[in-house]
Length: 418
Image (cartoon, rainbow, N blue to C red; front, side, top):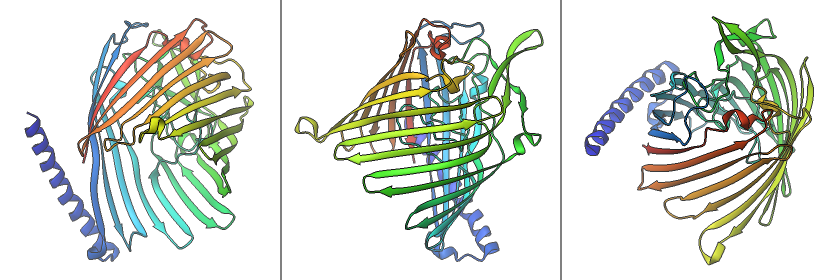
C-alpha cells in the first residue's frame, strides 16, 4: 500500500511540475523574461497528525480522546534575473476529522521579491517573524495567530504586505504597508484546547470604520553591535489580539470578537557571549482601553559536545512580566503576568537531525504550571516524525491554564517532504 501511495504522489508532483512550468512559461512570455535563465522549484510537505487526550472532555460537545487530521503545504518557487527576482507560492490546507473549525486553508505566502544592491522589495502575502525568546514572542506583531493549529501561538496566518528593506552601514531599515487584516482562528464547538464558552468567528466588530480593510503600518530597525543583535520597531494598526466579550446568540452564550486600534513599540536584544545566549524582549502597547508594558527575558547556555560526543545540550531560563497583572483564558494577552520558564534542548547533531526540547512553566502567583516535550527525527531523506506532549495543571480560575486543565495530550506527526 505504501508503494502505491508514493507512486501516486510522485505522479501528482510530476503533473504539478508540468503545470507550474507551463504557467511560468506563459508568464515569462508576457513579462519578457528569459526562460532559459529562470529557475523553477516545486517542493513541500504532506502529513498526518494524531492527538490523544488523556482525560474525557471538560465541556459539552467537545471531542473526548482521539483527534486525527491530514495536512499539505506545497511550495512553488520561480526565480529569474540571477535570483534577484522571484515569486514564491505556499498554500496550506488541513482536514480535521473532529473539529470543523480546524479544517481550513490559508495562503501562507504568495509574494514577489526583487533584490537590489543594498535594498529589497517584497510584495504580496508573507510571514514576518520578530523575536529572540523561546517561550513567548512578545515583539512578533505582523502576522495573525492561527490558533486552531496549536495552542502555543507559533503558527501564523499569511499577511498581505508591501515591505521595503534598505541595508546601511548603521543597520537595516524595514518599512511595511499592511493593507488588510486577518481575524484570529479559534477551535470550534467540538474542539479541545479552548475555554468553556466558544468564540463566535462570525460575530466580529472593529474600532476602525474601515474594519478589516484598515491600512496598518510598521517600521523596524535591526543592527549587530559586537556581540549584540538589536532590533526595535513601531507598529500602528489593528490589534492582533481580540477583546473577547460574552454575548447571547440564539439562546447560547458565546464570545464576541472586538479588534481595537493600537500603537506598539518593541525592543529585542540577543547577546552571544561564548556558550551563552542572553535574550530580552519588551513592548509598550497603547489602545483607547488600556496601556501596558510587558517583558520576556532570560538566557540559554549550551554545552557543546556534551560527554565528548557530537551532541549539544542547552539549558534555558526565561521570566515573563506583564503590567496588566492577572489574566484569564478570555484575555490571553495578560496570561503571563509573573511566570518563569525552564527548559532543556538536546541536539544530537546526527544525520537524522534528532532533537529534543523539554520545558516547564510556572505561574508564580498561582498554583498553575504546564509541561511540554517536543521531539523530532528525520527518517531517510524524505520523512520526519515528531512527538509532542503537553500537560497542564491549575487550581485558580483566574489563570489561563485553568480552562484547559483537562486537556493533557500527546501528539504524533508523520511528514513526507518532497
